[in-house]
Amino acid sequence: MANREALKELQTRLAERLQQAKAEGVAVASWLAVESGAQHYLLPLAQSGEIFPWAGVQAVPYTQPWFLGVANLRGTLTGVVDLAGLLGGAPPRPEQALLESSLLALNPALEVNAALLVDRLLGLRGAQAFVASEAPRGEAATYCGNTYIDAQGLRWQELNLQALAQHAVFLSIGA
Image 1 (cartoon, rainbow, N blue to C red):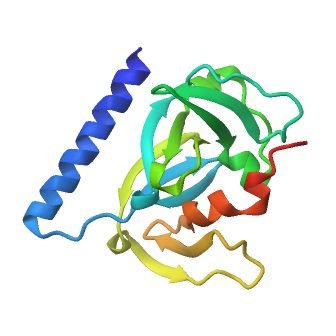
Image 2 (cartoon, rainbow, N blue to C red):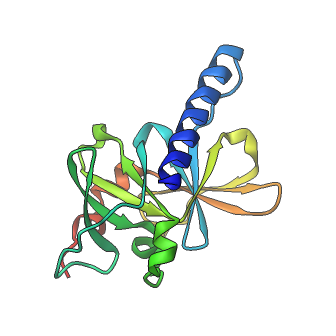
């Protein structure tokens, strides 16, 4: 229950900060920063949906290991994808780690009832939070955008959630 309240509080703070930044004419954040499988990702705010605490996910047999199952999120049956597992083959998480993680629903405008399991929400980021960027390499997946580097040297991979939701691997959940 405390986890649910903390997420509500985070969402409220983020919404207030966005409104305040718009009112002050400050550059508004473009991404939701998350950590998944020890990797850092930037997810476009316009393509991101609601954030949920880890909820009872019903496993679905004969699916890829990164497809965790389905969950009822606000009355909508939603497929749950382990972002780290999908992108890098991270090992399955123990139950305690799952309880500390969050589900990020994709924006309904993408017309995919899916949510991404992320280990940690790290707040909002804008381009001004980074000191350098690198264009995607030629072999990068179509959903990979630029890689941004912050002042501490952390590398952040931008993910285009619309392109990810249309990618053949993402759509092929069958084992």
